[in-house]
Length: 175
Image (cartoon, rainbow, N blue to C red; front, side, top):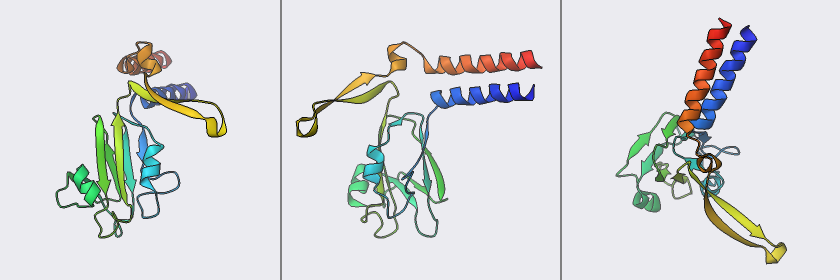
């Protein structure tokens, strides 16, 4: 009976993970919040959506994380911060669509590239790149399309509620 309960709990967590956001360790998998990681490349390879979270991992004796506006990001100026993080294991929720800007305010670090621009998008749409041809004749175009859940008319919160109801019913039946 314990194995069945564990299986139900695992299924519930998996369903919630699909509905809720993802956790993105900044700079992962090859780096963290440091001077070696290319954050422009890292962010370009990651899709950030509402409900996701950023996790900044760093040595508190060497770095910090400051959220700034675009002007502060462009000029590496942290004198007017939106938020300052100092724990070395900071979690930043991405609750709204838009662009967020983060820098390290230790002198010289931002100018050396220790800054990240994160573009948060809706879960309802995604960008698809379609390519034709080969080699030098390869032609690509990007288009924004509705996600499969939106196209099918699936409400993500309804999926989560259904998953929790199934787990609760399963637990009642087993006990």
